[in-house]
Amino acid sequence: MSTTSHTLGRATRRTGLAAALAVTAVLALAGPAAAHAEVEADNPQALAENVTLAFVTEAESAEAGFTEVRVVLPEGIAPGDVTLVEAPRGWKFTATDDGYTVGGPKLPVGTDGEYKVKVRQLPDAKQLVFKTVETYSDGEVSRWIELPGAEGSDQPAPVLDLKPAAPGAKPLTPSPTASETPTPTAPPSSAAPTPTATPSTTAAAKDSDEDEGGSTGLVVGAVVVALIAAGGGAWWLLKRRGTASAG
Image 1 (cartoon, rainbow, N blue to C red):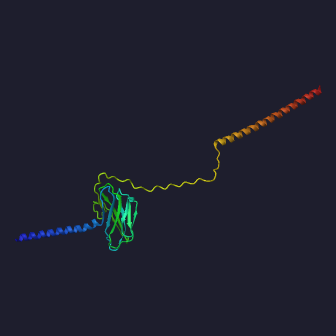
Image 2 (cartoon, helix red, strand yellow; image 1 turned 45 degrees about the vertical axis):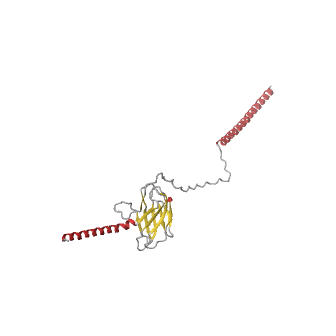
């Protein structure tokens, strides 16, 4: 083999080795971030009903264990449509305004947080993003909330790709909500109501007063007239007697 061929062979092997090392380094760097928080479904299809979602959050702390995982639900899934299927021992599911939390006693250091929930129905979408916030027993918080494809994203949220909806699939009606408690009304009072004057009774009383006043005036007037008449008669009688005596 010529010296030139030998030199080219060594250069080719070195180039191939360098490329393999570069690919390995890229995968080693990208692997943990991409696989840190994941979600899978037993039926990843739009408008599918009673779908079980399995979440896995990898433990990164060397000193503390998980105590809680909080998830913000994507649009189209209401907190009331999610129920817990499986979780670490002692962990409880709590619905929030925009999603839910699953937490409880701290997990052993290095133990991944794994749990499953059931969704009443998946929305009619191509992709679902589940923003996730993890809390460790030492208070450390890890946020995996960045949208997929965002520039410089190093903490992407778990993403679930959906297949197109089955023919004839339709959205379910919204989950029933608790009816409002009616406001209690005050019981009727047993005491008899105080009578109030009505316009008719007031007018009748006024007319009665006016009638009584009018009757009194007539009586007084009649007495005055009688006295005047009597006085006049007496004066006429005295005058007549005087004239007769004079005659």
